[in-house]
Image (cartoon, rainbow, N blue to C red; front, side, top):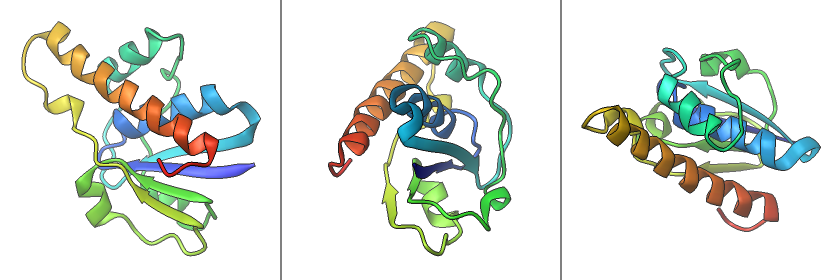
Amino acid sequence: MKRVIFICTHNSARSQMAEGLLRHLAGERFQPYSAGTAPTRLHPLAVAAMQEIGIDISGQRAKDVREYAERKFDYVITVCDQAREACPIFPGARHQLHWSLPDPEAADGDETARLIAFRQVREDLAARIRRLMEGADP
């Protein structure tokens, strides 16, 4: 089983959605985690966007990347530019990838407009995760 950690700044949306997507899509083939360099809370619109496709991430929590400092990962994937700069080194990680995704929390507008931004990030993550699972360069 391959271990994957998704890292963003707040561990509130992008990395949380990625963790939930990989868990849902890969089953037992991958063991997903997520963490943040400055964790805050799980964003309710991230939960809503995932619920739309039948994935419940409401039980996940924001975690500090330092909680995983001693663990070995096959993939360390940063999903925002700030996390890439602040991410600690994970010795032994076979692959370190960077997926530069827009922050859906920064979207303007009412809740409906903001939810669209979360959906777009969700779909981008799903496509990248499928490529990762197929062994291609995501």
